[in-house]
Image 1 (cartoon, helix red, strand yellow):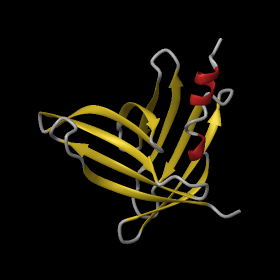
Image 2 (image 1 turned 45 degrees about the vertical axis):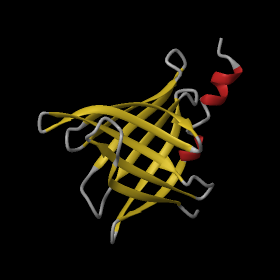
Image 3 (image 1 turned 180 degrees about the vertical axis):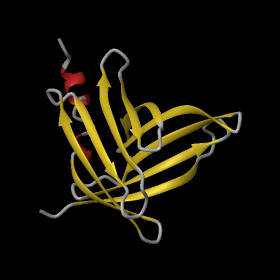
Image 4 (image 1 turned 135 degrees about the vertical axis):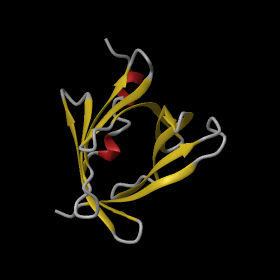
Length: 147
């Protein structure tokens, strides 16, 4: 049996649900379709970077009640497999992971912020100093698709 607190945490990613037009950089464009599946316990992402980049990817995210954190798995057409863990706090969803870059340990994270009903911002960030400082590697602006 889930607690009421767990139930509310299961809804923390609902802001991301829907169809989105994405923009980045000078003229980057793409789309993202975010749906709730498996009894609304899993958030599924279908990212399409075309025409600006050939990158296409899928993610699944779920709130792990035993861990008390969100977990996400990302796969894409470049062969990437990434796994993240994090939480929603102070109006931001932050999911992070440890990785290796040229033989050195780094941290990577995604941050969803400036969240409104119609728009939000997303950053892909990297830290080479254990999380003391972060460098933005990719910043995407989400705008909800108009029906």
